[in-house]
Image (tube, rainbow, N blue to C red; front, side):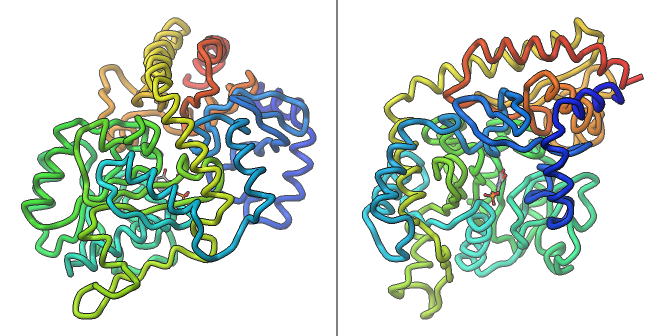
Length: 444
Ligand SMILES: Cc1ncc(COP(=O)(O)O)c(C=O)c1O
């Protein structure tokens, strides 16, 4: 690893200088915890297609693509054109405009559960509003989630994200949150069913159709079906967090992909076309509770602001251009799925050839590499990864060695955008082959 660090330091002196400055004015020198890695992050100056360039002139093949948001790749001309046109007219008005109507119409057209849509600015706000709507609608308090489920820095749901899943995720979270948000293992139908049936005060179950930060683990169809059945039987809501999977597993997201329709969905990332966005959408019956014109129950509504910048015209222009492009090029999903499958089968094979035991999870364009501690591990949950794999190896050595090869991944993987090609998959494959010997050494 020292060798890997030395090489990184020698290639990134400009980033090193920027990081020194950053450390003096930002905690840990970063604007998001996961953007730090040892010895310091590289600093980007531009991005185009599937690649970014850093301040030292290094080119990186990017599989992180803006926290999964850049489905069309960096700086797609269609999105740029839409944003330029909008720039001339205004970037923030704080009043109603046609762009928000068009974007909401697109969401309602594409996402099966979305009869009504409310925009906000981040995914964390979207899950917060979804939790509030569920509690307001049912009059109950408890929310069940999956271990390893990441729903953003939403205070209401910041529980059981990291193993061992039984301690507070952060200082500053009220103890009551821990009592009212409980977790079951992902893909464990028995445990989830038991938890739902046991809970008398259940407002909702929230789940990602493919665990994102928790390990790129796809749900089993029957797991999602069981959640749907059990919540319905108890008149609790089912919320899908599709902030990663929305418009990524297909135009209709995870709910279309798995054929299970939730009551509410939290959306974000791709929906903003590269600009900040979140949205909560769902059935008219539930969403109507937030109607500012009244309705509600006993004169009371679920208060959802959306925020100062909600549905700002620059974001809606980029989001609409992105969704329209995806609709017009829907066959691209198939191509990305094929490339995703190639990655998921090639990486473990290439590592095995180099004497490293690896597994690769994911679905369609999403992938993530894991290094199991022993043979025969089937990764079906975040707990499997926490208990059964070399986590630090993935987060540190693997990542840094790949950066030295000109490839950027996060948590051992990332996703493909429409800008990625088969050559890029080969590039990744060759990079993995090149780093296997050093990684084998690290595992000793
Ligand atoms: C599944 C999931 N939910 C929620 C969020 C939070 O979204 P944001 O970072 O926009 O607040 C994320 C962000 O990574 C996510 O992956």
